[in-house]
Amino acid sequence: MKRFTDRLFGGIRMTWPRVLLFAAAAAVLTAVFLLVPVFEGTSFERMGVTFEAWIFFAVVIMANCEKPLESACKTFVFFLLSQPLIYLLQVPFSPVGWSLFGYYRYWFLWTLATFPMALVGWYIKRKNWLSLLILAPVLFILTNDYVGGFRDAVKHFPRMLVMALFCLGQVLVYLLAFTENRLQKLLGFLVPLAAVIVLLLVRPQIQLNATQFLPDSPSLTENAVVLAGDEGLAEISIASTGPDSMIRVHTEKYGETSFTIRDGETEYRYILVVYEDDGGHPQIRIRTAE
Image (tube, rainbow, N blue to C red):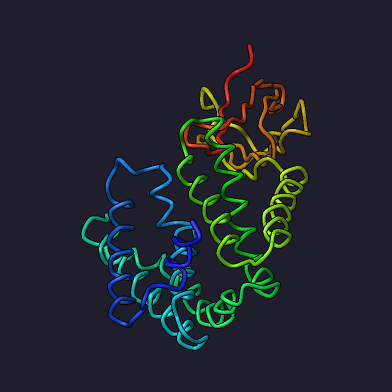
């Protein structure tokens, strides 16, 4: 394994042609994962949405550069070429056409950030406590991803299992390649894991704000008010009245609760269900109470 990591993170001659070819190949692969329907909702589609694969690409480039400035320049150009190319390859197949580039702003800002990040990131090659400190944010991101991925896989097997294994593998490989003793490796693994577990315990299950039509489409008036049965589960309010009456729901938990809408002398009784769909996304369902 040590021979493999030494080769991957330091044994590749990262020339400019290879950087450009690497960027083009990464862009084509990402576009395929985003465009081909079979990859929708899988770990592979995340390559076009989240950071885990791009962290790996950046570390490979940085670790195979001779100097910090070279690392910064080549990592920056890699992202400067690959990210817009992903959008360009999708344009012919997208219903919004060139408007798809409106989403590129997010990735462009991160592309700008890669220059200083790779300038500092090159020093992970020193394989000391500074290396571990520089790696700390990356280890936290990857740990958060693999913990979340394994939780998804348990609930909706095998969804996100590949992503979870990939992120866990990155954590282990980086600690093997860029730390020099067992204490550093142990801290590099356990500290991010402990931080993620604490966050899972203290942060809300979900953050869901949604509007929903009511069953049987009642036409509410401006006098309508919501009487919630369990205010601890969700905050429910009137979003709109008239023929297209809707309610607004804000919740941070999964569960079920009853609520009543009183409109003058009329009352409407409902059950609100907050659940997770097969894709792992929070959803709400409203049905008439019996």
